[in-house]
Image (cartoon, rainbow, N blue to C red; front, side, top):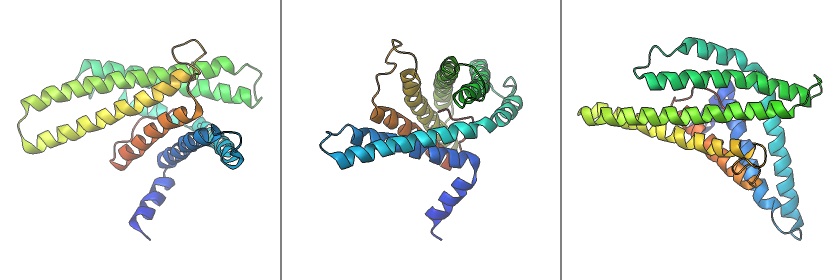
Length: 237
């Protein structure tokens, strides 16, 4: 078996790896489907394919929502192991990280209630719960951006002080990872704002292809980071 195929199999055998692959296909389908569905109605075949890809994307998104029903305990274990961030040298990084964990922990039950309401398992309106879960996701993303910016600043200061070759290369790799994390979170934050109620910044103004593009960028970065052994935390919608 080819090494690339073996790598893909290993990726799909892990829960996080499979989720990242599904997420990439979900947003990739929305990107292509959004572009094709915008074509003139006279191009019936392309328009029809675009609609099917959008439906496929919606089903993959629903699949990930159902799978996240079982993420609470793993998130709780991660939050417990991190605690109040005693291993962090910087108080700012520690505070932002703890707040991020709180937002992530609260996100899951809110999404579960929204899902259960849509599935008519409980008799509540899902709108406010979807909104709350989106707000928590957006808050987590914003906090993650602030954390990465703070870490980047600390790494730059450390890079100026340290002169060793190996140390400098390690610091530069860490800075590259943090930069990718910022780009990924900013792409997801753009979508999170799009899913907010109309009237809030650019809420509701993204076409399907742009939502797909933002999500695809974030998902591909997630795959790159996982391949580099830098996958921790959680993925949102």
